[in-house]
Image (cartoon, rainbow, N blue to C red; front, side):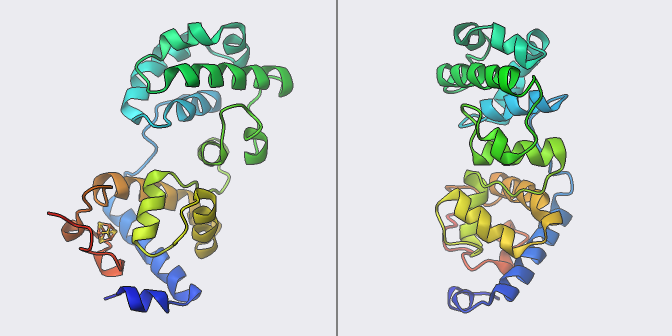
Length: 225
Ligand code: SF4
């Protein structure tokens, strides 16, 4: 069993092998793990991911059907106003800021990208309100571009598993990505999110029923049940 002292001496190769085994076990336990946001095309995906910041996917999924029915293209959003967009997303947390960001991002897509969603993470980050994590989720799911974006769940679980000691999401992503082949990046992202939501919860990790218990140096340390 791995402990904290052994983990500190763990070579990069050993950590990489351990991470791949973690991904394998999580995949076996949760083959159904997938993005919970509901969307039909890449533009809808971007909108959903932007709305999901500090909000549950379930709540986002309650507002997007009506939003997507009314706004089909980036130009549709651009012709609207932040306040009209805000009326449609009021159930989503931070709706005022998000309606402004959404309007600005769609206006930029309409005016500077010919109405088409940019295909690279760097270009997506030029859109108002779109950060590195959001761009990573979009390129991964919309275009199949390898990415391992780090949200609050991925970061917390990665630190508990001793796969990274970094707090900055981009640094965590760089460390995780260096441990896995590109073809596993997107899957690792999704599985760590689900593991963080279902088992390695923020306040109460359920170590006793964790399928990667044997591979975790933090097992039981923060468990309170
Ligand atoms: S053993 Fe506990 S702390 Fe480690 S990954 Fe599992 S739930 Fe999280």
